[in-house]
Image 1 (cartoon, rainbow, N blue to C red):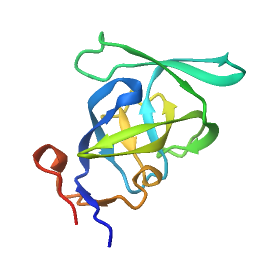
Image 2: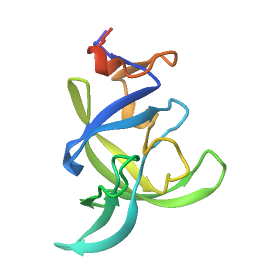
Image 3: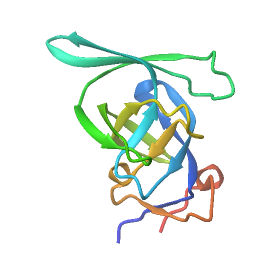
Length: 147
Protein backbone atom coordinates (compact mmCIF):
# COMPACT_ATOMS: atom_id res chain seq x y z
CA UNK A 1 0.00 0.00 0.00
CA UNK A 2 1.37 3.38 -0.99
CA UNK A 3 1.69 5.75 1.97
CA UNK A 4 -1.13 8.22 2.41
CA UNK A 5 -1.29 11.46 4.34
CA UNK A 6 -3.65 11.43 7.30
CA UNK A 7 -5.40 14.79 7.46
CA UNK A 8 -8.00 16.36 9.70
CA UNK A 9 -11.23 18.08 8.72
CA UNK A 10 -9.36 21.40 8.59
CA UNK A 11 -5.85 21.89 7.21
CA UNK A 12 -3.65 24.59 5.67
CA UNK A 13 -2.39 24.32 2.11
CA UNK A 14 -0.23 26.27 -0.31
CA UNK A 15 -1.25 27.12 -3.85
CA UNK A 16 2.15 28.28 -5.16
CA UNK A 17 0.95 28.97 -8.73
CA UNK A 18 -1.46 31.51 -7.20
CA UNK A 19 1.12 32.82 -4.69
CA UNK A 20 -0.98 31.66 -1.72
CA UNK A 21 0.54 30.16 1.43
CA UNK A 22 -1.00 28.73 4.61
CA UNK A 23 -4.57 28.93 3.31
CA UNK A 24 -7.00 27.34 5.81
CA UNK A 25 -9.16 24.81 3.97
CA UNK A 26 -12.13 22.59 4.80
CA UNK A 27 -11.51 18.94 3.87
CA UNK A 28 -14.85 17.64 2.57
CA UNK A 29 -15.23 14.01 1.47
CA UNK A 30 -18.87 14.77 0.68
CA UNK A 31 -17.90 17.27 -2.03
CA UNK A 32 -16.76 15.95 -5.38
CA UNK A 33 -15.11 19.16 -6.57
CA UNK A 34 -12.73 21.54 -4.81
CA UNK A 35 -13.75 25.20 -4.83
CA UNK A 36 -12.04 28.49 -4.06
CA UNK A 37 -13.58 31.83 -3.12
CA UNK A 38 -12.58 34.54 -5.60
CA UNK A 39 -13.76 38.01 -6.57
CA UNK A 40 -13.76 39.98 -9.82
CA UNK A 41 -13.78 37.09 -12.28
CA UNK A 42 -12.79 38.43 -15.69
CA UNK A 43 -12.39 36.08 -18.65
CA UNK A 44 -9.95 37.07 -21.41
CA UNK A 45 -8.01 35.60 -24.32
CA UNK A 46 -4.24 35.18 -24.32
CA UNK A 47 -2.33 33.44 -27.12
CA UNK A 48 -5.65 32.19 -28.52
CA UNK A 49 -6.47 30.43 -25.23
CA UNK A 50 -9.21 31.12 -22.68
CA UNK A 51 -7.86 32.63 -19.45
CA UNK A 52 -9.46 33.97 -16.28
CA UNK A 53 -8.33 36.84 -14.07
CA UNK A 54 -9.52 36.97 -10.46
CA UNK A 55 -8.75 38.33 -7.00
CA UNK A 56 -8.26 36.35 -3.80
CA UNK A 57 -8.33 37.61 -0.21
CA UNK A 58 -6.31 34.79 1.41
CA UNK A 59 -6.65 36.21 4.94
CA UNK A 60 -10.31 36.61 5.94
CA UNK A 61 -9.21 38.81 8.83
CA UNK A 62 -7.39 41.26 6.51
CA UNK A 63 -9.62 41.58 3.45
CA UNK A 64 -7.62 44.57 2.26
CA UNK A 65 -4.85 42.09 1.32
CA UNK A 66 -5.60 41.10 -2.26
CA UNK A 67 -3.74 38.74 -4.55
CA UNK A 68 -4.57 39.21 -8.24
CA UNK A 69 -4.21 36.00 -10.24
CA UNK A 70 -4.43 34.78 -13.80
CA UNK A 71 -4.86 31.21 -14.96
CA UNK A 72 -5.72 29.34 -18.10
CA UNK A 73 -9.30 28.06 -18.04
CA UNK A 74 -9.15 24.29 -17.81
CA UNK A 75 -12.91 23.78 -18.12
CA UNK A 76 -16.33 25.24 -17.36
CA UNK A 77 -18.78 23.11 -15.38
CA UNK A 78 -22.18 23.33 -13.83
CA UNK A 79 -21.76 22.58 -10.14
CA UNK A 80 -24.56 21.81 -7.72
CA UNK A 81 -23.79 23.46 -4.38
CA UNK A 82 -24.66 22.12 -0.93
CA UNK A 83 -27.81 24.25 -0.87
CA UNK A 84 -29.03 22.56 -4.08
CA UNK A 85 -28.56 25.44 -6.54
CA UNK A 86 -26.63 24.90 -9.76
CA UNK A 87 -24.00 27.38 -10.93
CA UNK A 88 -21.75 27.54 -14.00
CA UNK A 89 -18.16 27.85 -12.79
CA UNK A 90 -14.73 28.28 -14.29
CA UNK A 91 -12.29 25.47 -13.51
CA UNK A 92 -8.54 26.01 -13.23
CA UNK A 93 -5.76 23.51 -12.65
CA UNK A 94 -3.08 24.47 -10.14
CA UNK A 95 -0.43 22.96 -7.92
CA UNK A 96 -1.71 22.01 -4.45
CA UNK A 97 0.76 21.55 -1.57
CA UNK A 98 -0.15 19.82 1.69
CA UNK A 99 2.47 18.79 4.21
CA UNK A 100 5.53 17.68 2.27
CA UNK A 101 3.57 16.56 -0.79
CA UNK A 102 2.24 18.40 -3.82
CA UNK A 103 0.17 17.48 -6.86
CA UNK A 104 -1.97 19.25 -9.48
CA UNK A 105 -5.68 19.63 -8.75
CA UNK A 106 -8.68 21.20 -10.42
CA UNK A 107 -10.49 23.96 -8.54
CA UNK A 108 -13.74 25.70 -9.38
CA UNK A 109 -13.84 29.46 -8.84
CA UNK A 110 -16.91 30.81 -7.04
CA UNK A 111 -18.26 33.16 -4.40
CA UNK A 112 -17.89 31.44 -1.01
CA UNK A 113 -18.25 34.66 1.01
CA UNK A 114 -21.07 33.12 3.05
CA UNK A 115 -18.84 30.16 4.01
CA UNK A 116 -16.35 29.94 6.88
CA UNK A 117 -13.44 28.78 4.71
CA UNK A 118 -12.20 30.24 1.45
CA UNK A 119 -11.44 26.81 0.03
CA UNK A 120 -13.26 23.51 0.08
CA UNK A 121 -11.07 20.52 -0.77
CA UNK A 122 -13.14 17.77 -2.41
CA UNK A 123 -12.70 14.11 -3.34
CA UNK A 124 -11.37 14.68 -6.87
CA UNK A 125 -8.45 16.69 -5.47
CA UNK A 126 -7.73 14.10 -2.80
CA UNK A 127 -7.53 11.21 -5.22
CA UNK A 128 -5.84 8.25 -3.52
CA UNK A 129 -3.39 10.43 -1.57
CA UNK A 130 -5.26 11.07 1.70
CA UNK A 131 -7.07 9.47 4.59
CA UNK A 132 -9.33 11.82 6.54
CA UNK A 133 -9.77 11.70 10.30
CA UNK A 134 -12.78 14.00 10.84
CA UNK A 135 -12.16 14.13 14.60
CA UNK A 136 -8.84 15.96 14.06
CA UNK A 137 -7.79 19.37 12.74
CA UNK A 138 -4.53 20.77 11.36
CA UNK A 139 -2.55 17.52 11.53
CA UNK A 140 -0.16 18.86 8.88
CA UNK A 141 0.85 21.65 11.27
CA UNK A 142 2.29 19.13 13.70
CA UNK A 143 3.97 16.50 11.57
CA UNK A 144 3.52 14.75 8.23
CA UNK A 145 1.37 11.75 9.23
CA UNK A 146 1.38 8.91 6.74
CA UNK A 147 0.01 5.38 6.71
